[in-house]
Amino acid sequence: MGISDILLHIAAAVLGYVIGSVNAAVIITKYILKSDVRERGSKNAGAANVTRVFGPVAGGSTLLLDMAKVMLVMWLGGVIAGETGTATAAIACLTGHCFPIFFGFKGGKAVAVTAGIGLYMDWRLFLICIGIYLLAFLIKKTASIASLSGVTFMPITMLVLGGFSVSQYVVAIAAVAFVWIMHWPNLVRLAHHEEKAFAVKKAENAAKTEK
Image (tube, rainbow, N blue to C red):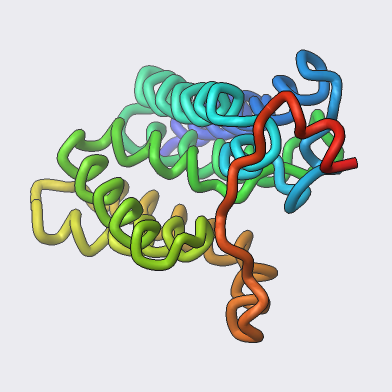
């Protein structure tokens, strides 16, 4: 890899991190709904907590925007530096999402971004992992268990489907690592049987009940 290739990958990484740092949960709740989700519910700046506190419309919007940003980043990374540039940009986006430079390095837990990565790589991969997520959620009614289950099966599903490159496996494994690390507090609560079941509050009552 020459100097020009290194510089292109650095550009892809910077672009991925900056765009990844644009956290939809914070923008929607703090600047549109006027109540920062990082101070509510589980205090996580992700789609699940937005849904829990502000309802499915806000949560769904957060999910779609977070998925869209990583898909944009991966496309741009590919344009800049080819297939490995796509991987570089995706991992940088995961980093920015979890540790956003614009919001005090306090972001989400990488689940929505990982979903976007899966959809970008292969729609079948996305659907299978979403199916695993929904199955785990129906059984346990716990967002953290569902998220960890769906994400963890991503590299395994890729092996079953076949046709993925080494750089795509690297991205998938990195995504699994990010999600597990960011869910460490949930894992501790699960170990102590203290993790609560997922429940959605009515958006109009959220401000009254979650101060």
